[in-house]
Image (cartoon, rainbow, N blue to C red):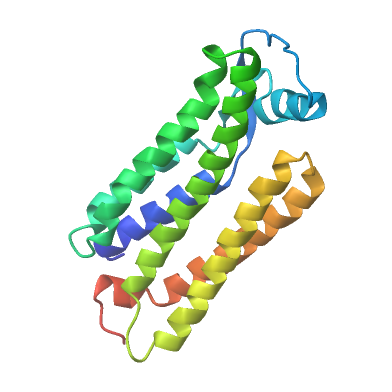
Length: 211
């Protein structure tokens, strides 16, 4: 296999690791301290569902996903500097993800609720946008006069996948598990279609000549 395809395979693995979340409990957070509020149902939703009461370990590790994303960006940066520009965004996304996971160890009461509410949306949406931008830059290396229409359709599949992923993030917040699962499945299906189309045009990415 052409070594030039390696960074794209690393990027593909990073996208999968970041898109798929299967978590197991690791250690409990400090006991939540209730506070007076006019929206007890919202507080209950955020504290008991969104934040939870334990630090959760993602079996498909997000930290490893971000590391692989950074590695692929460094490898692809010399040929497409947009990947270098993506690194600060990936770092910011990782920081928000870690803050979301570790915040309950340092904040409690109303501050835990407000921070959990805010960090969930920032972390989830920023992650989707980072992945979308990374995949869009992959398409940069595929765009030629002959493949322009094919490439545009691939981008559409990628955008549909990212949109479905963003909706899944928003819907899961409201504890609508089955609806979130449907959108997650759609996200993965269109993501698979996108990467399959990229794979069929890999010769453009590696500089190989078509046989």
